[in-house]
Amino acid sequence: MWFAKKKEPEARTYDPALWKPVVRCSICTGEQAAGFREIATGRFEEVMLIRDERDLARFLKKYGLETVTKEY
Image: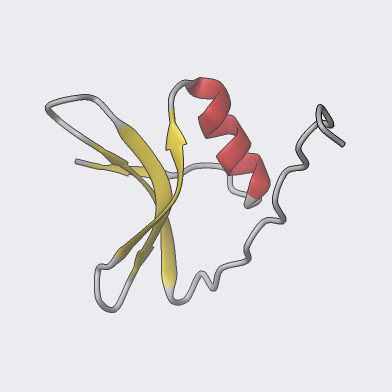
């Protein structure tokens, strides 16, 4: 109840024909955000903040991906 372990939210499915998985990286601060870029419009929808390699691995596993491209 109070100290129960939080469950991982359900993975939101995406359509590979419409969305491209990317990691957006800041050149200045080095901040990385994982999400999906809409192919038609280029709009980026952030899913999670990437702090280390474990976060990136969790993102890849959550959406069943093997690799993801980085955009600066």
